[in-house]
Image (cartoon, rainbow, N blue to C red):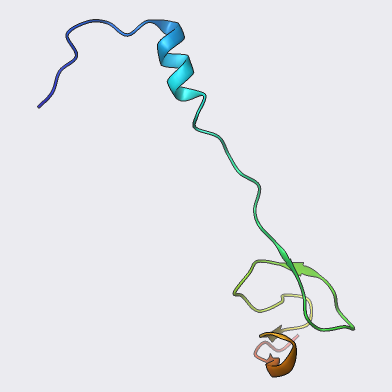
Length: 63
């Protein structure tokens, strides 16, 4: 197993850790024109219960 030979300085450690950023959750607008709520991509809309693109929407949840 690799072991560091020297102690890493605070500035180097913090510069490395600065790359670990949290990203905002990506959302999409519901394809149902009556709903237009935001929800996670590739999931059913929690507001209206429909899933799929415009031409092939289907009701998958009872709301």
